[in-house]
Length: 363
Ligand SMILES: NC(=O)c1ccc[n+]([C@@H]2O[C@H](COP(=O)([O-])OP(=O)(O)OC[C@H]3O[C@@H](n4cnc5c(N)ncnc54)[C@H](O)[C@@H]3O)[C@@H](O)[C@H]2O)c1
Image 1 (cartoon, rainbow, N blue to C red):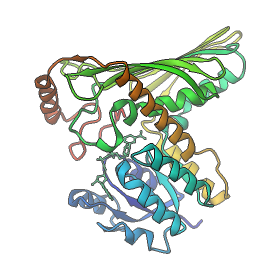
Image 2 (image 1 turned 90 degrees about the vertical axis):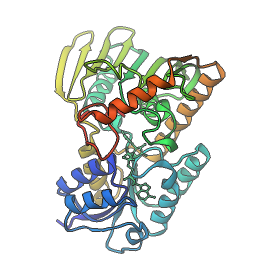
Image 3 (image 1 turned 120 degrees about the horizontal axis):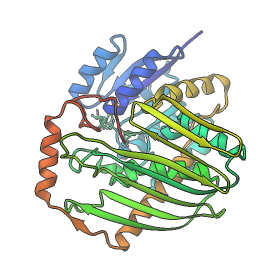
Image 4 (image 1 turned 180 degrees about the vertical axis):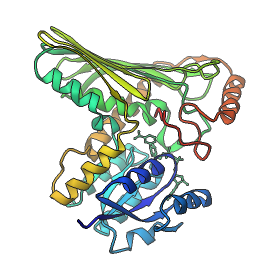
């Protein structure tokens, strides 16, 4: 079988994860890699010795042998790259968010939906076996009607001043995944919400946020997200769960970033399933995207529109938290202490790039 050729733009934490899975996949061949960082280019040559490595993204767009581009730099570079890719007739595998402003994101939706190219966005929850298991269970009627969605994702993760500025505070950078997946389960649009933020360490932006509210179909939700969970604890941990309550039964899931456990309690089915967590499920996305290009239609990859709805809603929830007042707790000195401490760690939660590509990537 002829492999699909892909050029990678941005070989940081996520770019390296994608590159690893693309090289492993029988569907793909990585032929070019571009990154302005010399260190990233050195890693690129090590990871894919046969690829052409450069610091000029136009080398990728102008190569007629390339079928698809992987856009794994930060949000502010994405709209221009998406425009160039579509103009050059390339399919697109993109990280989220697809732009650094909501207006630009909707412009990207318009461009993508007017083109005949396949564009996948890494809303990784939609590639997760445990979410498909719980959605199928809910749809089977075992829980009665879905009524309450509760999601929590708190880790001692990414800190201010560690990059990702165009992606916004954690409730957007990371929280948009949970805003997306709640909407996916509810199978309805967001209706009302109220948000409470906390400006931990007296940082200018909330590093913890809880939003609760309703979907148009009456399902209620609460989402708690924060990278505030005991950074200076002698032994770090996290608190991540999904909890679905129906009129008759429940489904829930928790994980330790290596193993995920799903518990189903239905009217006639009781099951506990434990399987590997699967990190960002990039193997699943890369495979589905490749098969979709070959089939000529989307076989189930997440698309641009859903990513933009999630991005816009998480920005709006952040704005609501600001309007409701997000108190300050703690001092900038503690924040500095945490950032300095993280520089000494070789194992941890979303450590800054180049130090280590850890297996417990928590964003
Ligand atoms: N889907 C997820 O679960 C998930 C998780 C983490 C990050 N992300 C997203 O992935 C993207 C990358 O995040 P990351 O953590 O890998 O960041 P990173 O800072 O580790 O890597 C970014 C890389 O892009 C390179 N770069 C910057 N500008 C560039 C340009 N114009 N052209 C080419 N390369 C450029 C940088 O040199 C760096 O190597 C972000 O948009 C982030 O929001 C998604």
